[in-house]
Image 1 (cartoon, helix red, strand yellow):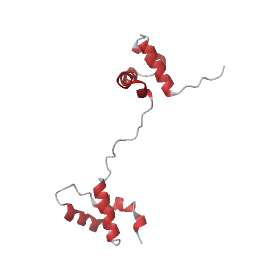
Image 2 (cartoon, one colour; image 1 turned 30 degrees about the vertical axis):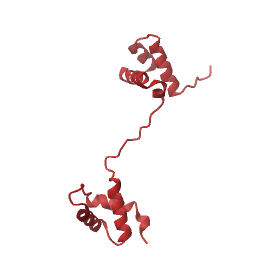
Image 3 (cartoon, helix red, strand yellow; image 1 turned 90 degrees about the vertical axis):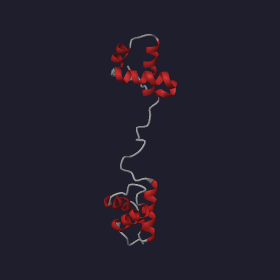
Image 4 (spheres, one colour; image 1 turned 60 degrees about the vertical axis):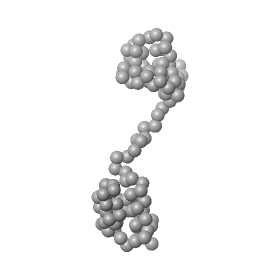
Length: 123
């Protein structure tokens, strides 16, 4: 007997179809080998969004906790282009003077980490 190949979406579709036929959530979850919490998550998404909700979703975070804001990063890059011999300490001081009180200034180590990503700017 050959193995039957199925995708995640097909399994979710079969799961929802059985719930629509009137089977109980606990029994269907047990047969599919998933928790009831996961079963209700799939069921709720299907009821709210339809068939598109059964597709896999991206697991990529919406934002990264330690990422510099774009305008701060742009200022660091511009400062390094203007003054290629400056290091993180001087560039941070420049940011302190330019942005005093407007935004939270990153630490010297953060500025240094940002500069290490733009090492191609060095002559």
